[in-house]
Every structure is written in structure tokens, then in C-alpha cells.
Image: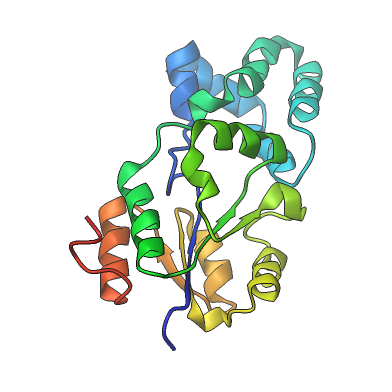
Length: 206
């Protein structure tokens, strides 16, 4: 069946999400390795992405690990420095698809408050036809429930959805339900896939 809608992850597809890079610059690579080794920071962030309040989760973690409190609080206070810059070619692809008349959705692990920060910094996040943000949904990828929630809401059969994500486990969960998946490694590869699917011309995908 032909693709009826294109689904974008956001982190590392439309916006770079690189906490390790941020902390390497902020506290040095050796300290960053010790910091990430001592605390499950990505697990902490998953709580935010499931809908818990951003500041409360960070403050609770800082209290639990007082030796690293200053560094943990950076996750809140300097979050936007971890979520940058925009991946301009991918943003152009989003807009090109919409100009071509293809519905474009977002499906992203993102907290409620952090997404509001993202919207202020990146207005293109307003441009999707539908947004599926995990914090509002109460479930994160790659849980099968989040994909079913998308299907139920949009009404498009799974085999007519094309989904780009930078994580193989998220792609695997989608393709297990019949979605078409694209493991995103760079914008040019994604552009080539969209052209191959007949969704964009080569010129439009530049």
C-alpha cells in the first residue's frame, strides 16, 4: 500500500539531542563519564518523558545524589543546550512533505514541560499535522501501546505509515506492528528514502 502519512521522531532527527556532548563541554569528559556512570540520567529523563513534572524529577534526583547535585540541576537549567541545534535539512524535508500534500506527524519521547521549551526555541515544531508527545500520552517508545495510540487516533492503517527514528529499538517496535521504518542516521539518507518512496522529488528533497 502507498504511504499515507510520514512520522518523524524529533530528537536526533529534527533536533540534535546530545546530553553527553553538553556535559563534556560543561564539566569535562572524565567528569562526565563518572557522572553518567554514577546515576541513570537517561532513566531520570524517561520519567519526564512519561509525563512526570520536569523540575520535580530533576530536584528529586539532585537530592538523592547530593555529590552531583549541581551537575544534575544543569539538566533542568540548561536543558536547551542539550537539545540543539536544529537539523536544518530534516526541517526542510518536513516542510517539503507538507507542501507536497503528505500528512506529517511527530512521534517523540518528550516531556510536557521540555516540549514547551522546545516549542519556544524551534517554532517548526508547530508545523506537524498531528503531534504525539509521550509526556502527554503517559507512555514512551518503544512500548507497543504508544504506536497503537497513534494508529487509533490517526485512523491510518499501520502499513501506510512511514516512521523515521534514530533508535533501532523504536523502529523495531513500529515495524512489528506493520509500520514502515527508517533508521535515521543522517538527513541525506532520510531524504533518499522519501524520494525512493515517491513522496518527494529529488529536487524537493534537497
